[in-house]
Length: 264
Image 1 (cartoon, one colour):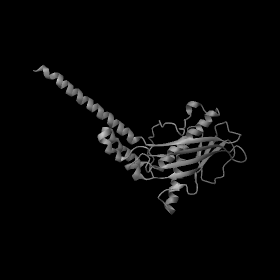
Image 2: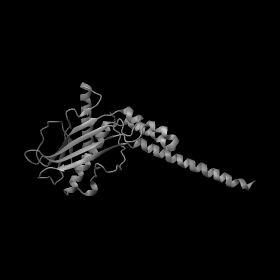
Image 3: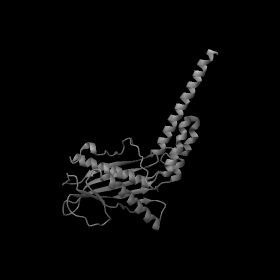
Image 4: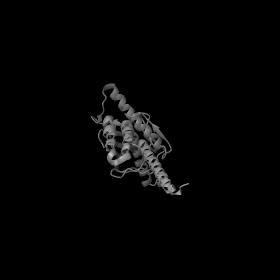
């Protein structure tokens, strides 16, 4: 046996092992990019209205459908289809708020618009879609980097029902949208960036599946976090049980793994 060949074989084996490790890491990165949405919703500001401000956790929170501002919707639907789209967006927001709020208050109930509500230690959460733009799935998937991205802005009002007339004591404004990463066109950068360029394939898939229904879910999460933060500030909720809302301008550092049943 020629022992002088052993070092050569060992070096070649080490190179093969290193290549396999690199490929496994690239696959892990690509897989994570597939599941993590390239979208973000932030709380623009939170305003407390004139006193009195409630300082107790409400016995129940009612969630009413959000309204729409005139000419605030930019989608490719009209007539019956547009009405169905609005109703679906209202439902998505409500269904996102109810289970999240239930983590901080004893009871949460979804109510139709115009429902006559009881007086007592109760709150009402409702709001308005100030801006909804569905963007372009094709541009999100092919180009990315903001092209064809969705946009959603809301104003949320929280009412206290402990007095004879409902009192809006908290206003929360949110803004956000989807698609800040490069689309499938980024694969063309393979000669420069190498295998990492292939992750743009997964960005393209994310661009196709993202939409304003995803934005509504993310908005409900940030609104709930802002309400829980208010309860902490009033001493009604322990800080460790609350969520921290993402403020506008803060870096996005949370993974979005919730996939709604359908996206628009």
